[in-house]
Length: 308
Ligand code: PSU
Ligand code: MN
Image (cartoon, rainbow, N blue to C red; front, side, top):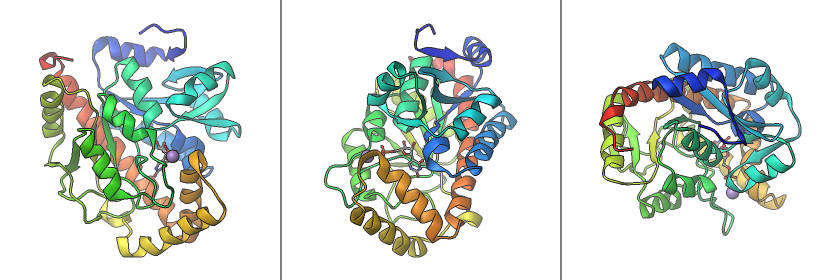
């Protein structure tokens, strides 16, 4: 792929040429989602998990205004320590480019860049969605899921969001919501939400076959794969609800809106749970990296059968 604003590492270019499995990783989780030094540790561990499961990781971010597909370890360090990073969703790419800025790409931003490059599988923690207390705050992540044909592996969405409204939006836009070994839409820290997925699939192979069937029909949407947090690190819904409610009220009182809202809520929830939510967050991210690597392997094995 040749584009003046994109820069791929030689490893990713090679993997793309040989049709090897690749998993894209977002970087807003590094720049805005997690505190230091856990952000760097997590970024390294996600890459490691993906390699150990037979795929090539492609962390996507902006450095000096270039859209970078794959980062060196020094660059991961630079990104994780940088203070002046942008949170880059669709409308922010050109800003980062003209200002030669560093930035972490959101789920939406990462889907865009991965798809431009030809990477079809992407692992993240939780997607953005429809916010609760705010009258018209809907994440670009949902629009991207409606428009960009990639498989996004996540642990559902946080209960800081209006989960029923988020699922309604995805239904309206024709986005399949897959439950991996579950019938229930997981709520990030919690395995339960009381809400249903559109289809339950029990293996990476079944997910790859589903993606093939969906896209070979001419569907253009993304596919959201929801992977519940491992039992041992999960926090029950009843324990999270009051904490989330308190953080949301504080955000309203402090008049925090827009791009700043998700990072504020995540930080407050980590404080209020005395780090338990952070531990859960790290565990589910690694769990998603593993599943995404398995799906990428199954998908590359079937590539020739695809109309894409
Ligand atoms: N949800 C999380 N952790 C995160 C994010 C969401 O549990 O770090 C990040 C992701 O990068 C996501 C973005 O794409 O926040 C959504 O932000 P917004 O709601 O401003 O679109
Ligand atoms: Mn928003």
